[in-house]
Image (cartoon, one colour):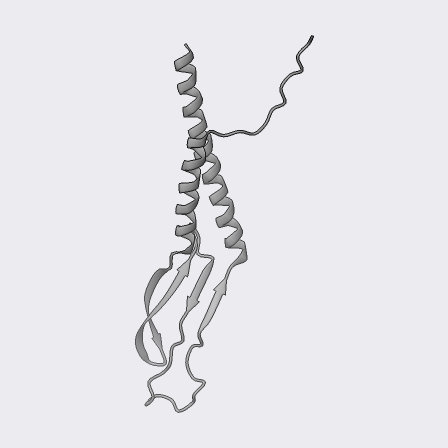
Amino acid sequence: MTETPRRWRFQIHLSTAVVLMFIAGALTWANMYPREKIFPMEWRGSHIDYAYSERGFPFSAYRYLPAVKPKSSESNNPKAGLPEGIRMSYSMMVIDGLVAIAILFAVGLICEWRVSRRAARKAA
């Protein structure tokens, strides 16, 4: 009776899966945690420190820009000022996703290499 060769299946060890789960959580946290940025600017003759927040790792894919209102003595126009807004860059989202996948793939390869190297040393 001849044996049929085993079909190859994608498998990872449990320890690799646990490490990848922690790395995926850290990458998700890095992408969702807001980073505050402050820069000085001249606006309508006055100096203000404009603060905004951005999210995304390693590139900023989401930016929240708060509204800037002029001092009441400067303008009676209620529409004067910089409006509040959200700026999203879908290309940076794709790049951030590809970077996260590359990091997970590299960590998975390193973990599996270490597991197989240790198993080969034990067998020898």
